[in-house]
Image (tube, rainbow, N blue to C red; front, side, top):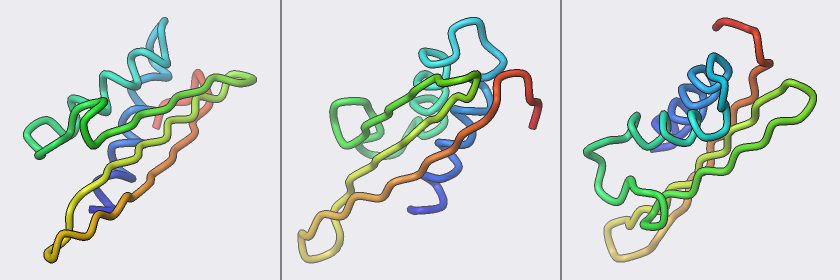
Length: 87
């Protein structure tokens, strides 16, 4: 699950830096990345935070899931890319 959340943050940043509205586009990209995963909706189990400072877009993704036995765990992924870079 950690790898999925890391990849979602990276994809959000990668797609966001190519947009005229990087923060909004990054959030949409994160939601689309995990389409089909249970609870992968903002406000359900997914929190997506974005910031744009000095031409660097940072995307943070938090996803909460339930382990066997009922315990919940939240994993966090973060990615930062400079506007104009093309990874």
